Image (tube, rainbow over all chains, first blue to last red; front, top):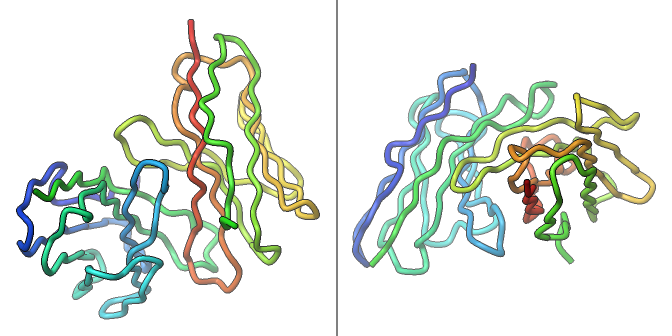
Length: 115
Length: 111
């Protein structure tokens, strides 16, 4: 059974703080993704990674960076948190696109509140 | 125009009803199609993949019409536990591994 875990379920930070969100998967998936989900806007892709040390910008990368030093771990970093980054952050992982099992598996999400 | 469009609802139906959700996608080269389910304050989970020939999983039937760029999900004999948001998901062309998510359609099944 695929398991994707995220470091925190709830997080409260202050404007300007550096925030680290961590995601770990145990299925040896090559692909990992970070999304944010906001009411009325759905899931929006922030960054994704095809392999260790590889990263690609998604649709809304501004204000975020990522790190993938190990295959199982993908970190999302908010360099200087702002109130408009208050959101639900979801991590996902999957096999490569050509694999018939390509669907994405999600972690439980982190609800981040920036004050 | 959004890449994947769904009616957000909510759809309020009585137990036992049959309900259908529709979804349209803009990229005709899209390759794979899925329906995900998301319960309130939880993560999305795969409900079923959608194949060109249509497919059924118990009370759930998914269909794809490539010519019209249209995907549907039919739920028969609705249960209270079917109450959730249903996300239409499309894999764009190019084998990137990325998925494009619709905003979701909310279903509320009432006793």
